[in-house]
Figure 1 (cartoon, rainbow, N blue to C red):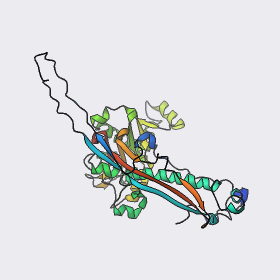
Figure 2: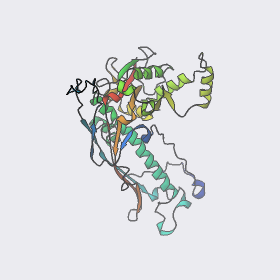
Figure 3: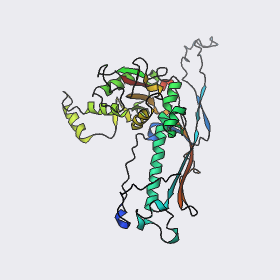
Figure 4: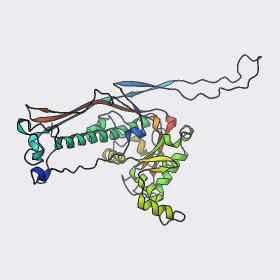
Length: 368
């Protein structure tokens, strides 16, 4: 197994204290897992979720003592069931002490015969930091774009590490417009490549057009939920388009607000009270999976294109994560083996994804 950390040739010229600072590449977090989804902890293999729809039409006029039965007989409700099936997930990484012993943070190593043991050193902290970030990245990637199809695994095996994700499950379950997301006509015209190019810049009106359409056509069950219990997950360029619309400093009636927003900015954006979440990993996944493995949810049937700018509007409680990662027995371990002079990083946990009701999720894509 290759080393998790490698020295780039010619980039580390100093020893000892001259190499005591390590700059960490920022780990993007396109999602706040605990804030945007419903977590089912301690799922070892499968967990059944019993789903009971609302009960309606159960009241009747009180006809007094003479009436033995109500005149309004409800149809009742059928309890259905879904399952969260989780996959066994592992992190198995190795670090050889020799890879860095001559050039990197030499004075930070342990002294004496235990010098090759990196536990407690700055390099060990960097490795664990990077591994945790990598697990978070793969979790977001798999939650949406996970696909067990052989063609996807051939592109990048990590898309298979946690089973099928929400894109595939929503499409298979006919949750959004049967199979594909609803198609929304953008403003750029039939010849515009922006709607089929991942990350292309959209006009300031397109983000608003897409979210307005998705919001207005959402099922009533989703509409009536409080805004704080819902999220709009969008492609980054849709998010940027909406931000651009909010910061139009020259627009009549919005000059003061636009100037303020353009300078101060906001850490979160909202659309009609609903938090808008930019999904940066969507772009990475759509780029990697473009072509024959493009997800059905983003395939625009009428326009005949692979749409790349989308919005999924859902209740937080409707997007489900099953895992046993919160189990105290599961931990990320880093230990040293004297026989091989290697450090080993190990973690074992389960992870799987599911959604609940078709009536609590909808979505759309921009087409030309």
